[in-house]
Length: 196
Length: 196
Image 1 (cartoon, one colour):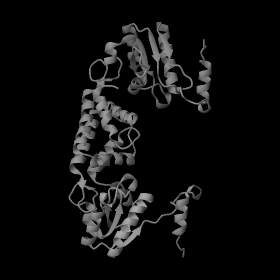
Image 2 (image 1 turned 30 degrees about the horizontal axis):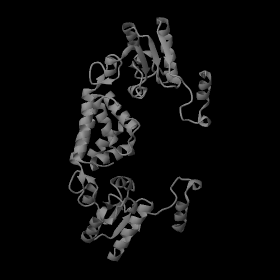
Image 3 (image 1 turned 60 degrees about the horizontal axis):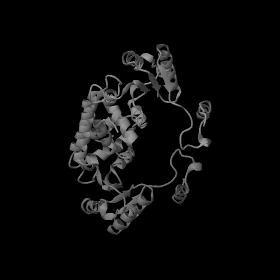
Image 4 (image 1 turned 45 degrees about the vertical axis):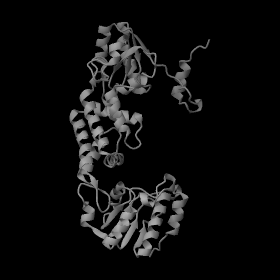
């Protein structure tokens, strides 16, 4: 236990994901030891981000407008479905993807008591009706929940005549077969492709 | 690369110790997804800490007054010397310590080009002259730099007739001998004590 003002700042840092007391204390001390300008910039950036940034009305991703840049400019007939906003940042590394996104804000997880109605599946269905979507690319994580969610959505969309695809699963570029797990190897084998 | 406002907040989080881009992004997203009140409290706590908290004129530790609570109320004839403010928090777990502290803000490190004049040794010497200090407990970390700094200060203070002690080193409570390193075991052996 230490000074109340410092404790307050430590408590704030502890509200960040996976930050325990010692890490929060280190962060708080770095603020106190740093310059006043830095503290002011930090404080303003928090308020500014919270004030300016909201959710895109179409895809749900963060934006400072009503409709985000990606939804505004790109091909809305191809929709890549991801779990979280950070996944959009990752997928954007695929330089020639010209479609748009749909952020679910979660995956179906019976264990955590999260069903289809708790993530943005209804909004996805509406987009499909309104925008004449031709392909939905399921890019949820390659884990149990991600796979289950992809499967659920595929079953929902297939009767509507929408092509649903899933990111290929297999061994990663630059990795070593020796350290690949069984599931990854089996998937890579199943999805093997013909070399011409 | 994403929205500029979000990037700004990510950049601020990256200024915290050992925070890389992905962690900073996670923190920033948690602010944006969180409530407005939480963002305001966070922002205010940063400014308040930086504005209210300064350094104690005597021991150098963080405080919101000119002289900290510990220096104000406790026995100034016993001084425990530590490397950083967080070490004061750790040492305060020793419930019956009634003395005060001296924060060096670093240790002597030839590798990092940090000599005796770069840490608060001069201030320690002044306290010893002014406060009639009887014992200086060296509680710098039990590593090369911490030991060297303790040794340096001991040599400086011994001629002044001040008793200089060092925290005992040995095997930790609850640890397993099998996993103790050589240096720790040798120290524990050297400093073994008589059981009566």
